[in-house]
Image (tube, rainbow, N blue to C red; front, side, top):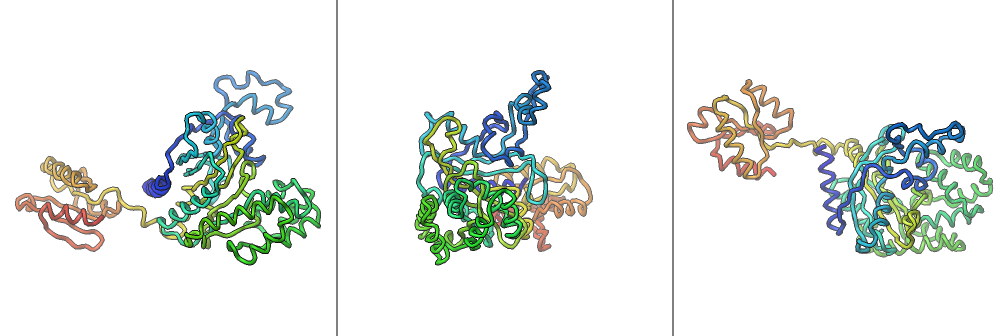
Length: 440
């Protein structure tokens, strides 16, 4: 939790420096709010909540025979939230007359998915979202990439890339290869290229009815990760200019890249990935994800533009763009890269040992003065052997131990021992306070 709170603090400070406001939504939403937003695969991962009381009272034999979808509607009206974006859209629609647009909000809460747990994949995990709602400006995407980069810099993580694609490029790609309107089906397979080889993806596509000519042409366009503005990127954009959707998608990406021209530290991390196809159920424009390199952990952040999301709640014309960090994935990444231990610090900077219980009033008074000086400290609550108390401080990673014994009380001093260096000094109280404050 201390590591997690440290990550929350970093991400929150970055979000707020860009003018985002905090928001929270309920853990449970009406099931009708969540369904139809995540595609068939995503919808199967939504945790449904049984109705209270006799949830079978309205169920008839024909409901059971009709299948689980029909039955679910009879026995479940609520569900645990699957992400934070759809609840945001619901909130915006309900409060649209009271919000100032563009509305910038961030949200840090757990979400739930009925997934098979594995490394980097959890049934309950925390997301940290930031979204701008009420504008179609691609400046939003440029600022999102800046926020991503700033968070990674503050975490000390340098080896990563930000993959980007565009929903309209995928639509144009499907049409260009001979299957217009089938980009969603194509992308489900295409998105697996970071896990399996092309022959596996090609076979899956053909099993879903795509022709050999389609997969052959698609394969000829695959080019790995491309640098913004590189000859390879320009050539691919030129080849697909005949498709209006693709032409628009490439044009918008080039606009984003131009906005970032003053931020080379951001632009150097961005790579165009034609196979990236996340969140096709509601994304309409640029889509992107942040992927650490050289580790097993998958993407730790992702997002995109959704200019029509609120229309599913009956309100058109409220575009938006946003992204999310996965806290649990970041913890896994820090553990794998050896950075986690440095964050697992103690909650106290000093432990005052219990030398003699008759001095408890003096101990408590000393602790009060230290805490008033801004020093987190604690008292060992029992007068055990000093060796045991020192071992406790070491196990808790408390860096310093204070001893107030008979000699120190008589002389008006304190013994301060640095557990890292082993150095021990006898100092006056004000000197101890200065040393502990300087250790921040």
